[in-house]
Image (cartoon, rainbow, N blue to C red; front, side, top):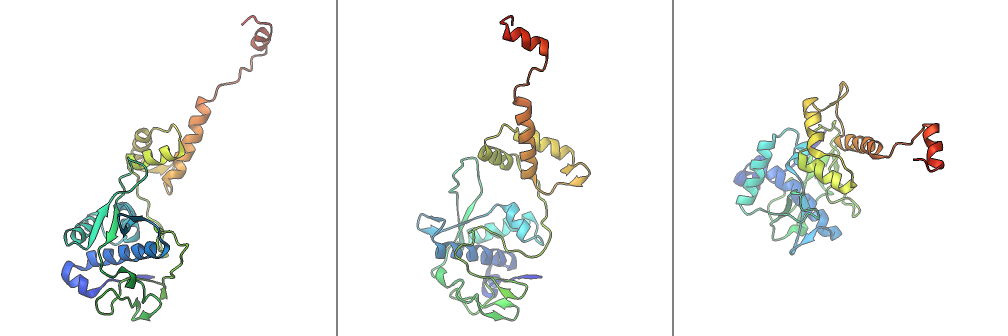
Length: 233
């Protein structure tokens, strides 16, 4: 079982939910600072959609996460940007506003009271995460937006039309995003009788079917083929 930590002093000021989200964003911003990735306009960023955050914080609703992010932004603790390579991709980027972000993960190796001891210019606090009573390893090759495995089944969240459109553009296929979403919405996002687990895999299946439909059909009529060879057709 994983434990999500937060800075208690920060929680007193803005609430527990914003403090938990802040700790998560701060962790990944620091990982990116150490690896030198996602640097834009003098800050190190981490990008997440609200849906992705809800998968990590499955005990919070989408509304709670949105309000938590708004609280952090309105209090000047987090700033928002958009540096996506694809224009239609509106996934937000977040940068933690901190005078000494480098201290964010200095205490990750010290386990204390089931949480991590982290220094962020405040008193010793749990400003990171614990997984199965083990500190999160700081690995330079760790993806800046990988998610901590919290040993739970991943909750499927239906994609938006824009998300499907972005994926289809990346793959360069001819799948109609609106048709795809409308079809599976009408089916309750089920594949046959089973609940869908991976919508991207379904897109790839549609892609293969689309390729088969657009491929020219081979004329198997031997008489017609003979006439073609003789120049009669």
